[in-house]
Image (cartoon, rainbow, N blue to C red):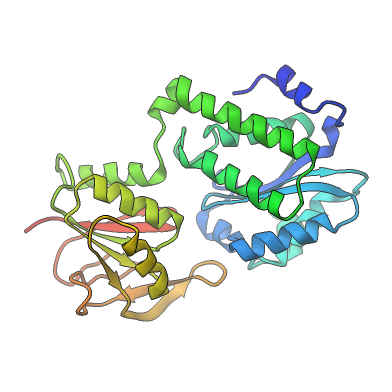
Amino acid sequence: MCDMDSTAKILDGSPMAHVLVVGMSHHSAPLEILERLALSHTDRDQLLQDLTRSPGVAEVMVVSTCNRVEMYAVVDGLPGAFHHFCAALARYARTTADELVNSSHMYCLRGLSAVEHLFRVTAGMDSMVIGDHQIIGQIRAAYAASVAQQAVGRTLHQLAQHALYTGKRVQAHTDIGRAGASVVSSGLARAVRALQAAHLVGRKAVVIGAGAMGALAVSHLERAGAAQILIANRTYSRAGALAKSTSKTIKNCDHLGRPARRRGRGRSAYYLHRSSRSSVDFNADTGSSGDACSYPLATDHLRFWVTPRR
């Protein structure tokens, strides 16, 4: 969704062939494999530093979301760039460089194809939910992180700014933008259908995770009129911070049981049990409930349950 003639002009004097993207997304890999590449902010920043110190890498930006991990770069005279970037990413992922290099899930785009891919991603055309409104903010955050690490030069600056500008125009002036919805809003719409209800007013809901997606889920549930929202998170402090940022009283489930199984680097899923802070008893892996029929609605890393009223 971008004019390639205009895009070429963005790179005034910058050889198009030197732009590339190496990564993996929900289009190329199943979630259980993609999760192994999940990067914390600290890991992302360290990866940026490692790549910018690499000979032949002039600029770099790392986009790490629930649905993709991509490294955009401007390289100059870097033979074996794909192998080099896979090896750098493997140092912060639950995999090896050889596995990434030989994986059919990794892709490498160069030149105009890489530029067009960035524009498509930023416009929400490559998202799990077409027209996803969150992706613009995620690209903007990735660009800001690269600027903070002094990893952005003229070419990526111009590309990122034009991609963000184009993405906002797509969201505002096309049917893609009007039809687009976040993964969370799509999940809530599915909850309404599953409950055979007209709305979620008065319902109880449980949000698993207190990160960006969890915060977005809480915001959507509040606007949908949920009567009670319980936040379950690996650390109490994150859940508490999210609770304080909302306008309603949110109960934090800090009585976590044993980890169910590993989910990506440094992540766990937990079994939650009834406690003084929680009025819902459920198994975080299966969605089974001890005292009510709950609907598990998985939306990527985020899961939430909406319980029907008795």
